[in-house]
Length: 445
Image 1: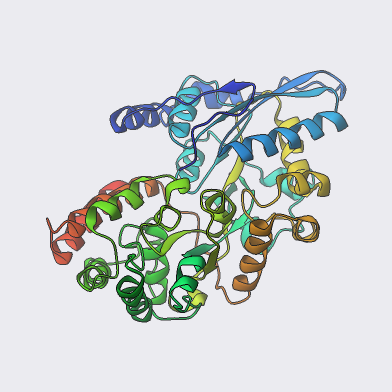
Image 2 (image 1 turned 180 degrees about the horizontal axis):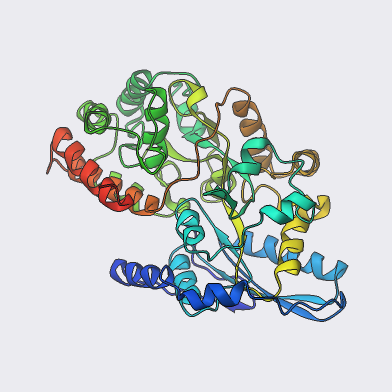
């Protein structure tokens, strides 16, 4: 979902793989020989000499700006700890987890790697990630200034598998310049889903631009909507919704399409498939897009228009402050102590926080977050901080980390929602198909 132009990092990888290759590599990564796990916990190669030279491999995905900021923060760590250097590997989101799977399958996972909700449960379940609980317990990893939800968000089966690096939330981004041109009102936080669709229908008629991207394939929108119905995406290790829920969701958006509130299926597909730089709200093919609030600065880079952001429709208590992503330590790393210390530094050092800004979301450390808020000058970043801070006042508690197979659930929602969007399935048929596909994805018998 990020641009593929590579920055001047130490390692540049932008390999792209097909779906079949991705599945094969991920499967390989998740059947790591038990010998690897045994070796990983059999003793470290770490020396008692704190000045011994150490090189840590550090792997992340993101846009070019994130790569530059991350490099600067790691260089700052080296300035303060001259014996620690980094082998930095960056690439765009496309293909990142293929590469991580390949490295992990060969027992060569980076010492520190970025991960997200799609895969943290899978990697933790196979003991790829180091349990950070003891480090957090004795202060080597200080999470005391994290909000409770973020501090606990990386826990999988009782083990802290990753440190939340950024707080984020769902955001409905709209083209304010377009709306102002036609003297149309902006969408508002708290409007119902029906109100939003009616608003979008009016935008389509007046501005001759579809009012909203069809959100039926957007998992975070479906998740918020479910929570507003008293349901959830997952309950424990099982799905938290029914076939009837999916059918109602697809019906809602079929009605929006029938009323002209959304683009045509081909354009909807484009919005589903493209990266953040080409979302419909910045390409002029829809007045709104359903994204994560921390993506506002990246969206703004790709349009001259002024953008605004509000919460998703419905009761905001169904939304939550989530970990936008995590950093995990490889359980087999010979430099666990140094790797954990790097995470502690990046999360808690105010100078590092000012460098990293809000690219991965609002800083998890609340004191660092305030330092960043006071120091930023970029208008879109200021807007992101202000919006997330304001929205967060009304949000509810966060759900647990998504279960193993979540990534497949997401892709199946897109696939089946598009079947319904193109009219190849009815909403009811789509509901049946998605329940079956989602159960298979998470191994629910």
